[in-house]
Image 1 (cartoon, rainbow, N blue to C red):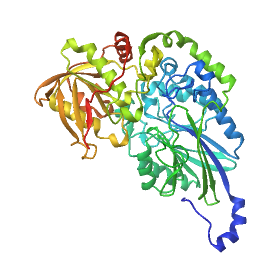
Image 2: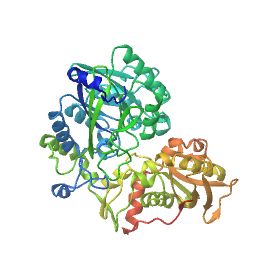
Image 3: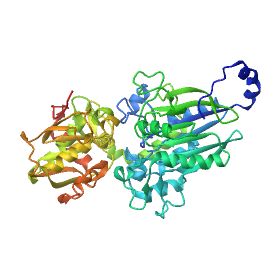
Image 4: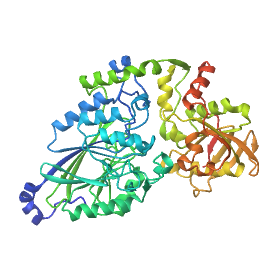
Length: 520
C-alpha cells in the first residue's frame, strides 16, 4: 500500500477506468489536546477574553468545532480521529476528569481515538468512565487489558468504519512504557508496537479491508520505526511527541506527511492549536495514489462556534474562583517550552526545582530533581494567577523526600538524559547541584562533572533528595528511586509550593545559571 504513480502509456490508457474506482478520504486529526477547552496564548497557556477579542489567541474547543465543521463541509468523505492525551493539563481536567472531553468530542463527531498515556493518569477507573461517555471506539492494540475488569470489554485493538461505502481499518497504539509514564495499574500489560500493529493489519486484510490507518500515541520516532517494520499500513496519525509536521511552517520537524516505507505519517503539534487535514486518494486495490494537505492553524481567522463558547463558559464557572486568584507577579516571561525543558536547563525548570528545595531545605535535603515532562507551559510577564501555575503543573503531584546514595543520583541523571534526542519527559531539571552531559555519547555514559553544593558528588555518601511523587515512584524511568530510604510521598502539592515560592520573591525575574551544561 505504497504511494503508486501512474506513469507509463499503458497505465495512462487505463486511468479513466481506474479513476472510477478512486476513493477520496480526508483525515481530520488532533492529538495531545490536554484539556485546552478554552483558547490558548502563544505560550500554550491560558489566553484571556480581552486578548481573545483582539485576535491574539489560538485553539479552544469552540474554534476547533468550527474548523472541523468547515473541513467536513468541503470534503467528500471525512474521518475525524484523535491521537491520544485528551486528559490532563488544565483545571477543567482536575474538576471534570474525562467528562467534558467526551462531551466535546461527541459534539464534534469524532470517529475514533487511541489511548494516550495520560488517559491512565488517574487509573483505569477514570478511563473507563470516559470510554462509557464517548460515542466512538477507543483503540489500543499494544496492550493486554484482559486482566483489568474495568477495561477488558471496552477497549478494542482495532475497528472497521465505513465511509462512502468503503471499509477503513483503524488500529490504536499507546506508548510501550506507559507503565512508567502513568498509572495503568498492574493488570494492563504493554507490548511492542510494531508487532501489535502487524497482527491487527493481518486480521484486517484477511477480513477484506485494504485501507488501514494507525492512530498512534507513540511519538514521531516510534511512528517512523513502526512504518519501516510493518506492511499494509497506509497512514499513521501520531501523537505523544507534540511534533509539528508541516510543509509551510518554518519550525516544522518534518514534512506533512512524512513518508516512510510508503506510509503517510502526520501529527498536529498539540493543544488544539492546529487541525490536521490529510487528503488521501486510494485506488480500487487500496493503494495510495495521491496525498495532499497540511495543518490548519486555529487562529482568530477561524470563528468560534457560539454554542460551544457558551458551553465552555458554563463549564468554567466553578473554576473561576480558583483560577483567577493572583498569586504572584513575573517581571519577565518564565520559559517552560517543551523542547527546551526536555533538553537543557530552562527557567521554569530552575524555578520549580528551586521552589521544591527551598520548601524542604530545613529537613537536610540537598538536591531537587524535577522531570522536564512535568512542565506543561510557560508563564507570561505580569500578574500570575493560580490558574496559570496549575496549567504549568497540572498533575496534582506532591513533594516527595527521600535518601539515596551519590551513585543512585548519577544513575538517575543518566536515566534523565538517556532519551534526550527523543525529547523524552524524563530530562532532569535540578537544584542544589550541577551536572554536564554529552548527548552524543552512548546512553548510560553521558553524565559528567556532577557537583553537589559546590563539591564533587560522593558516590558512597547518602544524600537527601526532593522530587515529585511521580518520579519518586518510578515514573519516567526513575526506578532507582523506588527503593529509596526514608521516602515520604505525601508533601504539599507541587503547584502550591511553586506559587508560594513565586509570591515570596515579589516580581519574579526568571533565570538560568548554568547548573546544566551540554558538552560539545
